[in-house]
Image 1 (tube, rainbow, N blue to C red):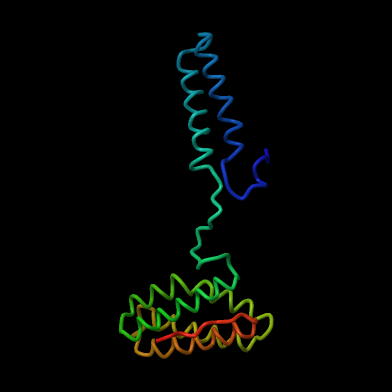
Image 2 (image 1 turned 45 degrees about the vertical axis):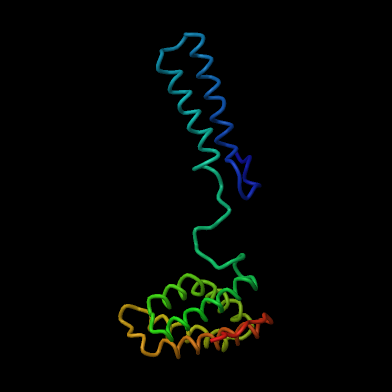
Length: 178
C-alpha cells in the first residue's frame, strides 16, 4: 500500500490502517467471547503497538541523519555556515586547540566543502582541485598522525580556496574576522 508516501513527514498511515482494525477486531472478539482468551489480547496489543508506532518510531523523519549546516544541502546558507566553521576552526588552531579545530571542521565545514567542490567542479576544475587539495592538507593536519604544526596556515589556505570557489559560483562569502 502506498498511501502516505506523498508526504515528507508525519504519521505512517499504513501502520494506522493496519493497527486500528486490529484493535477493533480484538475488542469485538473479546466481547463476543467466541475466540480463545489470548487471541483478543494479542490483536489489541499488536494493533496498539502499530497505532502508537505510526506516530513515533514508524513515522517519517524529514531530517536526514547526515549532519549538515543550517539549511538544505547546496544552499548559500549552508555554504556560508561552512566558511564560518572554517573561521572558527582557524581561530581554535591559532589558540593551539587542535581538538576544537577538528570539531569545528568536521561538524560545520567538512560535508558542505565536498558539495562546494562538486558544484564548482562543473564550472572550474582548477578551483575544485585547489579546494580539494587544501582540504586534504587540513584533514592530514587533523588526523591522529598529523601534528597540526601547519594547521593554522593550511586552514587559511582552505578558507581562501573556499571563498575563491564560492566566488566562481557567484555566492558571496564572508571573510574571517580574526
